[in-house]
Length: 349
Figure 1 (cartoon, one colour):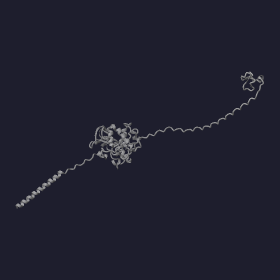
Figure 2: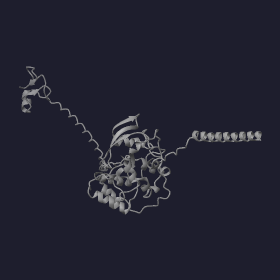
Figure 3: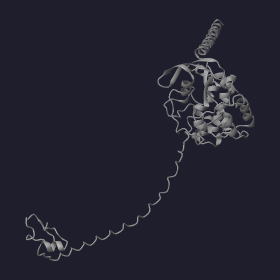
Figure 4: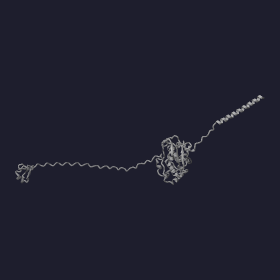
């Protein structure tokens, strides 16, 4: 019995020791295994761009800039007059809209200047900028036209979103109002045309989303005339239409500023001025044919030589005087030295 009791004690002790080791091993494994942390989703605005917010390397567009208008004359004059020429239609379905597939990756280098579009617009709209290299805007100050706020911009993963680039005519709105009929090159140009881009406050841009003038206007009322003119100019340049509600909203804004000019795109070909034709040159009148010169008159026939004087003889000066020819000079008919006594060439003096 004593032996049996000892055996039982050993078995119980081994079992307790094994349980403790297993618990420690499990606890050790629990402590050593890290807990996976879910990756946060990117902010909606970054996804909306379908590309990096601040591209490190500019990517040139495969096509040159191209617009629907034949030249910039479509935006010559006042915005309210350009609005009157826009077609008024209903929205087309949004079906098939694809930001990248239809309008290209965000911030392409369409104008081939070596800088991506976002940095082009930051460089244009911000003041007191600092850059890394010729293009990349690192810091700057934005006087936001949409809100009239002053915003400090610092490039970075968590700070770049403070200043976003708004498409004045949202690409989704354009898709539903004519952009489906544009070529791919024209849609890529629309997405990167400086005429259609404004640096603005990030949250305000996200609030606008793809609204048109009938559903969203800048909170800063003093900018609304220029904003309306930009929307109208973009739609005229790319052959887009407006809905009736959108037309009425734009017309209401411009009624307070009828002299607000439209704005021409730098992507639109310049107007070619045809030279004014000068007056037609008169048809040359042929000179009248000249009459032939008259034949020269024949030279007059030479006068006949005078007949030689007949030989005359005067016997003496009395005869010469009787004939009425005295005195006689040398060479006169009837002169002879016999009648010229003093030989002076004169006879019968």
